[in-house]
Image (spheres, helix red, strand yellow):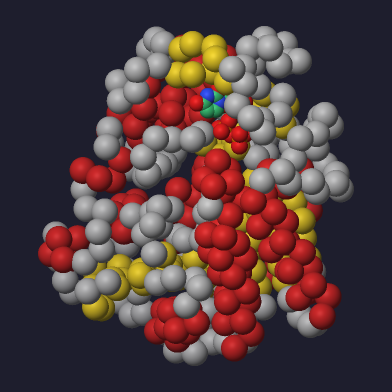
Length: 379
Ligand code: UDP
């Protein structure tokens, strides 16, 4: 059994990956500041993984699982804080050096916001990664999976985009991802023994098929899929399609949408490969290799769920590109991973989550602490 630390593990991709790791038999320690994640997500993950009883550690810590140590431990903490990280490695790992690998999800991810608040992005995304690497050094952990992004490729006409394409991000969010990738490459080159995977996500969407966990954006969603789900639920009047004059078959933007469970399984595979092979720096696109336009997604969502989605075509969004599709062959070659779920699966599962949780986790308990703990039997 491997013990894995997930930074930002209470967020969208982190929570789904947490479930995949628990189901694979690993122990998971999550550190999250709940700025864009919910302890309720992990409570539900522990239910889905059938971890059984709950145990309160402290007001903002809990653990779930059969026996000791807990299979899933959640700590409220900030990745920029050396103390919080030390606590995660020491307490969370059940003793120092208990953590075998880290999956680093914690970070800010809204492109538009990053243009208005660049320092915040450099602080959380870059300083956070520096602090994490320092903590890993202190605790003798050298296995890391980093959440990178296809946003690194910037605006390119290349279809599909291979990992070797030039990195030319065009906003602070993208610059911070590029900076962390660079830093990790420098660390791997300077110190023997590092096992690092840089996973460049394309467009992760959908939800766990149970409808119990899914994406729960703060405020108005920036991204297409959660926005479309909220239109379907009646929370938003209509979808604005950003541009109908792109050089694509139907004039709307084309993206590589992948089911979040496929992405979560990709993390599980990356971890297995890093642990099985000699130290290396692995850089992989995670995408389906298929492009779908905005209108393809709208039509698939309508057909799959028997709904009609009102939409209007408006001006292009600044900074968007016509097409972004992964060359996904390297991930298949290096770790035998490819997406298994279709666009219809994405639409079905995303709607299952949205329709069962119209307010996301807010209807439950977004705050760590009392009511969450009280609702659970304490063993
Ligand atoms: N998009 C849209 N309306 C929205 C949000 C997004 O038409 O409300 C389009 C956007 O122009 C792009 C695609 O949907 O072509 C995916 O955008 P998203 O923000 O989800 O991801 P991105 O690929 O930009 O990271």
